[in-house]
Length: 139
Image 1 (cartoon, rainbow, N blue to C red):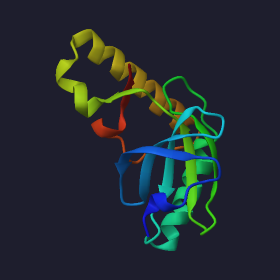
Image 2: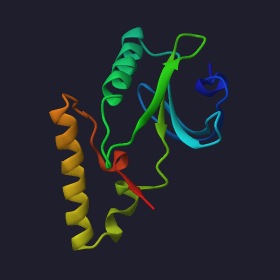
Image 3: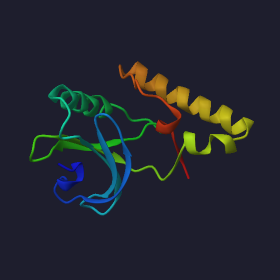
């Protein structure tokens, strides 16, 4: 089954943003018309991975920080797969633009990233997958 063949009610997929071991992330239009990042669990992963994604939603819902992508809502599709809806970040990943950053920008980015990770850690949340491809820089 294609992960995108079933979407939450009222959501429309625009394009795939990424794919990982647990699910796919789509740029989508929400029912209110705003662009969002919609993460949907793969249908063929082990059930414990679905539970892992549900836990991610529970943890992400606790975080409100200017440098942490906000979870807007989460739920389950008709087939039981969990989905998460995050704010859409218009920009590029650190992986895509690392070579173009100057010294002051790198220092600023480092401070912002450490601030966000420190905030999450203080809230009891560990990211576990910090990488240049997962650090998003707004346009």
